[in-house]
Image (cartoon, rainbow, N blue to C red):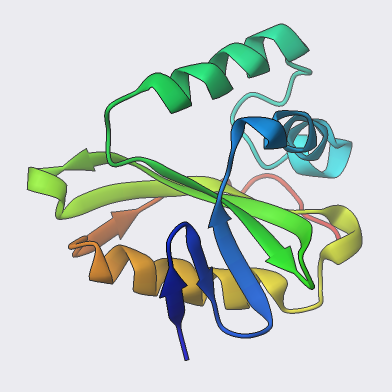
Length: 140
């Protein structure tokens, strides 16, 4: 069952909480991990300053964008985001979906995606889209 409180969604095992400025370093480490970089269009190492600038821009923006930290037992295991809303908020892109290499294969991604889709639905999103990179191999 989905439980929603301010800034937190949980199924009792996995939680999604909106990221905060204090998560910046953790988000950077997760995004720059070699097994995670291969999941993005830009696989290059991004300077920390550019990452920090993007984080600050996210928190200054007046949008419906939501960027969540995926947690299990109150420990970060990944991230997922909802952004680029169209059609009066009924259509959105999702991405930045990364599960830490050491947490892969444990069902956290599947559970988080289920929570995330329920959140999008209750937020009025009727159509989600994402670009999938089929040419890159993902290993557990």
